[in-house]
Length: 383
Image (tube, rainbow, N blue to C red; front, side, top):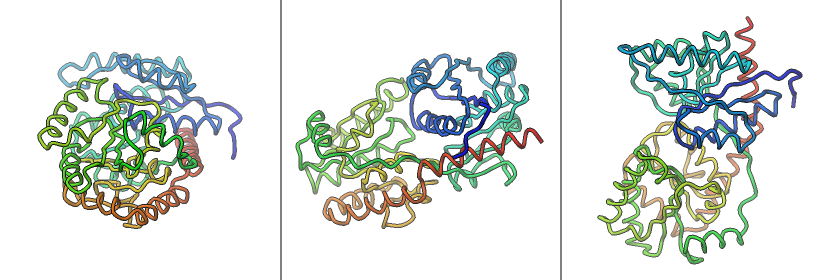
């Protein structure tokens, strides 16, 4: 692996107030870049100290920045913040700005352009419509990086081949969890050994389709009454998540299945908790290319997911996972029951999913793609 002789600095712009898939994905990008000789700085929202702490704990330099609404009627706050951010890029000798998602580009792309450095923007979720002022700001982006072909093809802002590329995520494939660790987690959660556990790792937000999962759980529990559903993800740290959690809880109680659900809240040991799952499920309204599916496959868990956006680019056949149509609780439940009834099939799907990650979504391939992305962007700006 080639290592650069002189360290160039990448500014990673984080647009969200909490820690989720975008933040974890950005940390993997920063680590891959560091292995190739780049210096990384995480720019986090001033009102989101937890994000800064997350990156500092991982050994990444951090800088807070102030958020300003992009407004035609009141442009001065945005202009002031743009100039302040440009000054920060120059003070920290930033060579390239990598916006972790489109909301970061809407804040930082003009500042990067004014600082005279290339600006990259990751597109992680579908973006079907766009305001004219947003499109104007995105003209400052040099390269768009899409997590799936679907995310690119449905993007509301036209991006041709010269300005866009698809970069699939990747991760290290670790050994499956030991039986002792699995039993320990189950004891912590109050789940007896032998009880079927269906797990989902996602914040409790409107994007994640917990209402369809609740209806599917009712169907599953009518057949397998001792099954348990473990939800790993924030439902208490942010107001929007707390509000949606209340809605989900009401639906679970209405269906009479609340007792079968265990919500762990935000965890720093997500992989450890996933080791106690028998089946991984992702019920969702929209996704770019969810890393959690790759993580579940790498842990040799059979996956059942909603067939939206980039997910069918991961699960291309029933051999590596099972897909249910959007908001179809009947088919979602049928897939879960099929795997509970046929452990041999579940094991085959789990093994095939792990092999797929090893073959096509490895950390090594991902790191090489990140290195090529940055090298190309810097060479292009030099020209």
